[in-house]
Length: 147
Image (tube, rainbow, N blue to C red; front, side):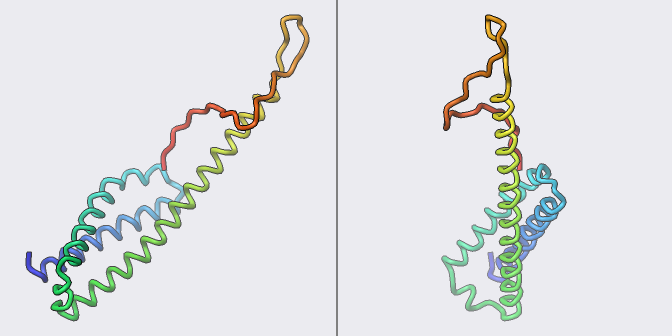
């Protein structure tokens, strides 16, 4: 592949990957984390293509030196924008994960509290409280974990 074509392809990959990340950010802002999964395959393919282009450039740094200044500026601008969007995407994903973990913890705590508050009749007909579970003993809960 010739150098201008390689740079043009890199610009296309960066642009498409940036657009996918922006869509993911929009989904997270709209509190629709379940929809994020629909972008997973695109992210994988575009990320692999981006990595391949960067690796090729690292192996042949002379391509950057010989690049047309205008094209170099376009690549620099695209990479800068991509990095900003990537950082925002990471912040949004971390926030969504943290919220999900807090909700799951709250559910588990409530289930545990309810289990401990349950009373039952003994074989002799006396109301009794079941024994408390030991600290650190796991509480079994099945959840559908999607982000």
